[in-house]
Length: 286
Image 1 (cartoon, rainbow, N blue to C red):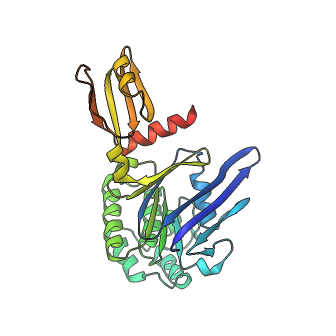
Image 2 (tube, rainbow, N blue to C red):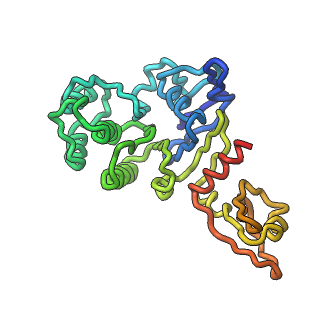
Image 3 (cartoon, rainbow, N blue to C red):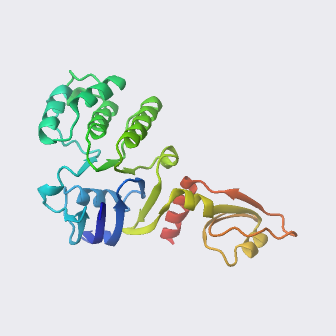
């Protein structure tokens, strides 16, 4: 199976269960949004997939190959993260050279072109770059690697609006030219809402949701009005959260829409991905 398969993965730090018997797959050829609040277990799972830490139990398979301490998956996956895993005393152009030696599928010429688009000074040492440009260097490496699975963990930290837009544009063009699996773990949900195809939502070490974005947005909606009328309409529906003010109420629903009662003064509205994320993770607090 061409996929990253997570099978019954558990990871515990002292008395904190970071991942609790997690099982799902990132299928090949899709762009995923991997979403979760701080402490949800998202970064822990990414680090397990990337072989930076190991699960207490369970396993990760990449194209049916066990990932743990296995060099066979080296040319299959790359994880761009906030962690600085580079020699910070080296110049950017020298880091490109070392990456080229380490990865057979690194396109150094492409990296130089991307660096130029971002105005990244390749003659500067990594440690001399601003936080934003350190992120840009990491993004440049990730965009220049022709591997089947690329994980971007909070990829736009420190980037201004123009650089974020340029990154998303380059990412989509790269995906169109070379199909692969792209996994974007981010808090900036609305920025990636039009890019990602599928969402995986993790909270408190468990997967709350995995679904196609379009399907979610088609079935997710809000209904607002007087509290008792909202409650009556939602009596048999999957309500994921509420907002209330005095005798007015908004219910957020993940279910099939049905016609509003003619006698009720209610309004239906679409629900965006950000609100869906917030309400589902609020529900996890209850």
